[in-house]
Length: 381
Image (cartoon, rainbow, N blue to C red; front, side, top):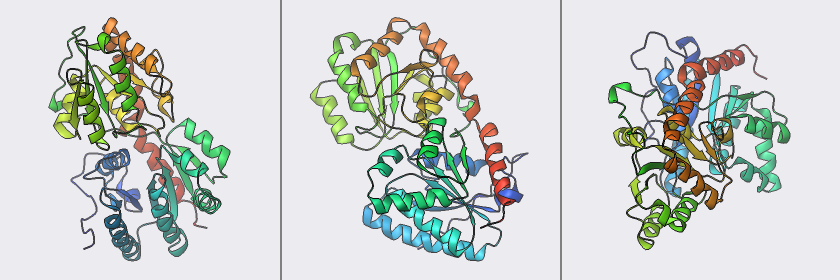
């Protein structure tokens, strides 16, 4: 069966950030934004809450490869049917990543632009896009260049990505639009963190695997275990190579220091963000990590690596520390700073709260609305 869920049109707040006369002219395509397990889905979920109507077709869900192909073909048919039946749609907003996501979105782009003459936005979130483009063969690189250089607008997440796309491609119009975070539900409470009380509670949320650096962190904790025992408690939330993670914890007897939470969302995620002291994400590549933005919204200091757009939100020595990817010794030294000087937790956490203001819906979405309106006044090629 086709995905028959209607477009989102919930009861209106006093002022939609994307009003109806604009929202009804935009069709978004991307991963599942309702039962999401990734940053793009989370961003789209925020969008859906602030569009007067959110016209969206899901093109990806977590499932087996064979199932995913069949799912995409069904959703592609729905995409065509929607463009045929809804004459109000003028813009197709493509929420994209790299690798398999690129090829799915290429099919949608070609259909929207050349079969239906729609204006197109290519919104690039992929943290591994550099690797994807530079390691692709000549034909794939030509296809990537074709899409990127023929989209009406390419949106990237940070200055780092703007500079990369400017170097590599002749983009018609390239714009930075910051990632966006959910407004924290104050009614759910905001537990007080007891200042200076050990152990320091460290939080990692992300895909379990080498790319996010979780095993570098565990190696460092294992190497300097005597310094961390009784003084540090690491909570790990995420999916991916969970068997390797659990095996590592058991093999090195780290149960007293590391607690694996599995995939966390909803109330449990709120509890962890509210009660932990420091957020850590020692990744090897990133777009602009939504998990870091969410942690900053909970007034957490950050330990991260200066990859992708991360250094534009984590200011070394201000609201956290930046460490070279794979540098386990320095990573642990920065952890010890928070253990030895507990005042840093609140001091840097306050800076995170100040810096996150520009990533709230009321700041980001008016900018997106302006991009839509600019494009709607432009005649299709």
